[in-house]
Image 1 (cartoon, one colour):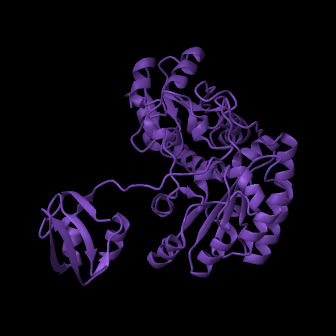
Image 2: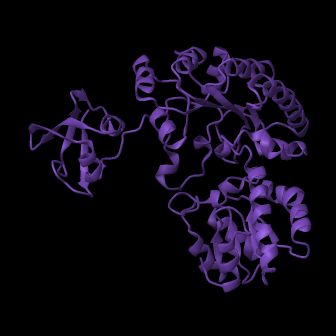
Image 3: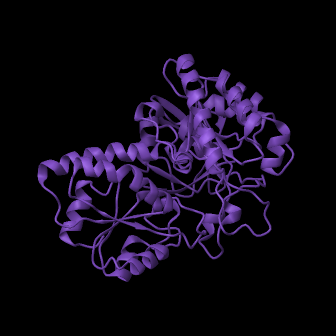
Length: 435
């Protein structure tokens, strides 16, 4: 289908707002991705546009297309048709903004933004397009390769063979990062071993596998009964990952390949792997290595403070249940070594929005932070909130912004970009200015 131009923000030249790009060099344009790919590079191309009911064509330099800075209509995304037993969208509390309930399963979003896609509904034509456009890397929710296990997890019949599709993409040179949401009693044990073995056979095109514990909120009425891994199961997973890591590092020349989410190490009471075991942190969005990277950045920021003198006012560090455990186990000893005598206050925020069983900092709401700060009587001290608790527009899940929380508390509230010791945070906290 043609792609409509909403506005021209650069040099208009041939293009007008309201034009629909029909084809480029005779190739039909199916969506915005085609328009971008077909018009990239150097040289010239013939653009066919529909304007006022008539089709007009002109050959122009691709540099002129780039200078036009066209803004296209919003892409129509492929909606998810699975009914995953662990789907987080089905566990969202009511009354939040509509976009938080939208389920996408679009390979284009996987390429553009790193969203995980199941590939359950791709066609052979979609796979050919992925290859022809070079949409790499892709982030794929695999979870299991056994058909019966997949049908139980995804809540639907499986018409495609995920292993076959991944092999096809790998042979064509597409890089894949895979995730496995682990549901105890469903895709653990032998199923997990088989899934990792199939993915491991695709290395180096399959670059990493993340094993993430299933996320469960308090809003599961009418949904299947599931549970998270126990502490004993988490310890077994850590031992399993260590054995596989040793094996894959020998096979791959140093890459661990299989990674566990930080939550599993915290639940197991085991130390996080060193930084070099994370292969460059390819799965940070899955909470894999986030803690270790934070410690590396915290150590760096602490070293800069050492040379400048201690800040007079230590900030209040806002985090969830898991983050508080992480801070006590890892960050506090680091600070005691690097900045003896400097002790920021940790504000553990119970998650009332999703339920007390949700402890990750990325799902904290503004109202929960306000309640916890008032209960803890943080007063006028500067609060530093984690960056992953805010979306691209700077909003918490309940649509509050840091400035809204600041007004409610009468205290500065600052969103860190890396750590609570980064220079801009320290300056803002010492100046007493509200974020």
